[in-house]
Structure formats: C-alpha cells, structure tokens
Length: 253
Image 1 (spheres, helix red, strand yellow):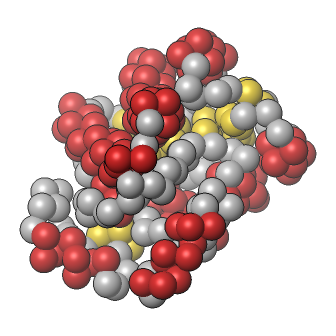
Image 2 (cartoon, helix red, strand yellow; image 1 turned 180 degrees about the vertical axis):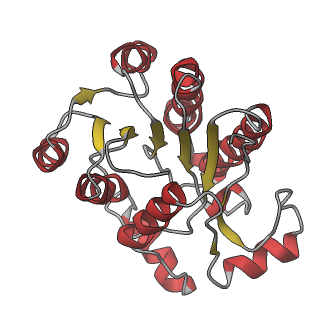
C-alpha cells in the first residue's frame, strides 16, 4: 500500500508505540485520525500530525460506538491501544479483568467490525492489529492479558479468511515485551531478573510501517521467543518464525 494520502484510524495514539506511529505516518504524508484518552501525550501527538482527534475510553461501550460514528473515509485501522496487568490470577479482581478484556479484545473487535463496511468500499484497505507474543505463550503473571491476546489472534485469523477475496488486507503484528511506560515497576524488575529482552517502540513501529507498505513483508521473531513458540508447537498460521504475518491474502487485481 502506498501510504501517502491514505487515512488511518490509529487507536492508542498517545501511547509509546502509537506516538511513534503518528510521527512515521505523518512523515509518510498519511492522514491520521488519533484515538486515545484525553491527555498531554494525545495533545502532543495531535500537534505533530495536525489530524483529527477522537477522545475515547475503551472501557466505555458508548465511547467505542462514538469512534465508529466519527471515523469517516478511512483506508486503514491500526489497533494499537492496549492495557497491561502484571499480577497473579488470584490477585486479579473482576474490574481489572473487565478492563483488560474491553481494551485489548472487545474494542478492537467492535471497531473493526463496525468500520468494515466502509473499508470494503475502498479500492485498497488494511487492518493492522498490534498484539503480543503473549498471544502464543501463556506467561505467569499475565493470565488475563494473555487471554485477550490469544483471543485477538483468533479473531485476526478468522477475519483474514473471511476477507481473503476482498480489497481488505488483515495483518497481525506480535511483538515481544516493548519498553514503554505502561510496564509496571514489578514487571520491569521481573524482566530484568529473568534476562528478558525488550524491543523499543521505534522497532515495532518500523515493522508496522513496513507491513503496511508491503503485501508480503515479514520480520522474524527475535530469539529466544521464536524458539519457545516453535517448541510449543501451537503456531497455527503459516510459520512459527514470523514476528508479523500477513494472514490474509487478497485476490484483488
């Protein structure tokens, strides 16, 4: 896809990855509709892009519905918003579970299906879901988070097959731990103690931009996560070695 002059709806625009994507998309002459919770980070992102801003809390069904109503003439959706909870399952309350499910799974599903009729009218369109390697690996301390990430992976796989013969391409991007401010101090300490490597928001944003530009762009998962997924043997897509995978192929001319 030629990014220039395309319009993208970007959720999580005030976050670590989202904020970098705003810069990259704007530099590529794309128009960006920024979706996020009201705050200084969102205002800074709006200043960079000059694009429309839609403030929304994805734990609110009304806010999610309002985004669908307000978003017009888009060529792509980049679902980047996310919520993280690092805690043992026994210490995770119902309110936290509801929030994680709403932000990580329900909101991107509802936004995507609600905006899909519009995307199907475009000569070329794309849906990018930024998920996590925890959509393949159940990690202790992230039970609720992993459940939503496994769920979003299944949604992407099914959706890509439904849209295989349309002009809409579905892309699933699954980075490992990303070094952003959303990680709690205890999660950072755990990753440090275990020697877990983290990717930068810039690295993930670069991958996303390459995926949008190229119909068959792949980037390998970095070790050791690649080995863990291969040994686990449950990667049901085309290959266990992809950080991102174009799981939907269109037969468009």
